[in-house]
Image (cartoon, helix red, strand yellow):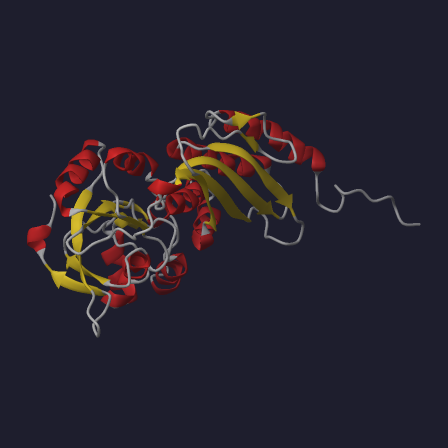
Length: 355
């Protein structure tokens, strides 16, 4: 006679999931901001919009994941930073349209729920939300036995922000003579990790505990460096300075991302060598024998966000960002697009560097 089966016996422990929700409530409360209604644990998250200062409010949304950077977390056993990456990848994408982040939801999927591991991941999401000024108002924890290896998981996030229609940043105001101001990244951020892992683990035969003198730490520590969240910097600029375009430098690098925000009539003269490149990039390029063009279209190479601003306010933009302890560089300018040439023309111009 077949013994009586339960959901827990099949690998899904509802009691354990309920305990995790109780632990997450403290994290969510630490991210609370005006507009949050109620607590997490319901069927949906509630947020009350205050649009009294806006003529025509527009919601801006983005969804993203962390990609194969998660593999580094699995190998190191450190799970408290990838949640920051998750928030960053979503929030930075809505910042570029002028939106102020409001709230965030996450999706955490695993084979067998490890409460401590899941709490570490979600604590990182809480850290990211606090940096971005948005509230964690809900999410989904999916326990799927046999679908993932033990202590492995996948993450996805969803961010919503708000902007007045008249203040949407869409690149339409970009003109010849505008400057490109680059804001430094913290390193690789969350893109290019399939190539990174191939170089580090297959070519160099390293493990995550290998100390790399050029980096001053282990390769695992370097690769887990959290993605920068640019909310404070962009919101400060957008308050009273003209931002004609913003580009979040993610997959595709500078070459692929900055052209997404400029008008078809415009091209870019990019000043090669005009910013500090973190050591992880030349390290990977040398080890993987990666061509310069491939580096430019794969990695951020030290620039995580680009603001396109009128020439006459460039100095003020740079000064304000430096006052916020941002590393900032004037990395290019908008020019007339060549009918036959590339959208981006890379030129050596160290004199344009903003030290």
